[in-house]
Amino acid sequence: KEMGIMMERFRSGGIAVLKLNTHNQWQPRVLTVTKEVHVFNKTDDARYKGIDSCPKGLLWLKKFSDSEQSVASITGKKGKGGLFFSTIESVSVTKGIHPLSKKQQKGVFKDSYTFVLFSNDKGSKREIYFRVANKDDVVLLSAGFQAVIDRVKNDEHLKSKAFKL
Image 1 (tube, one colour):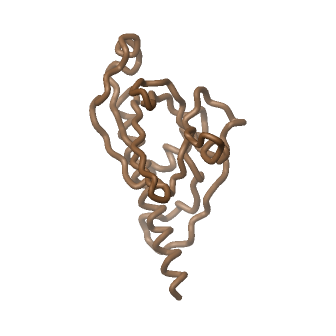
Image 2 (cartoon, rainbow, N blue to C red):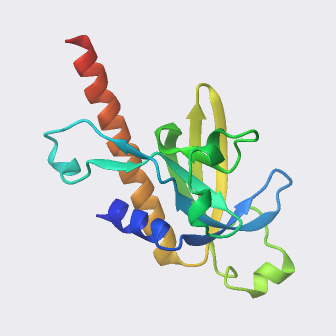
């Protein structure tokens, strides 16, 4: 359920966040998803009933744009504008680790929550830090990402099982 709500919010304008850059500064971004979709293998597991597909990747854009919602934002020259859902291993929620700027402390992110996506793409591990403005968003995102992680793992298990037959 949370996965569907989260995906709908991503598609209908995105979710405003702050993303921690490599210089430990928070930058405003909008979380959205790729237009390209991954279709899952059929499963009998009741937990995944109705979850037949999901976008291939998560994108963080400077501003929401329908034209930039492609896998090219992940696989492009820099490849830093997103990540594939299949590479996300876990999600964690915490109260702020890295401080906000003075301007950000006075804005909508003053009581924000930090969540971290842990990814592993062919041995290249990343921790991507985001801040969301309120508790409802952090609960939705953590539950939604966990649902995606679980469904992707289930799909990989089904593929390996089918491959062995």
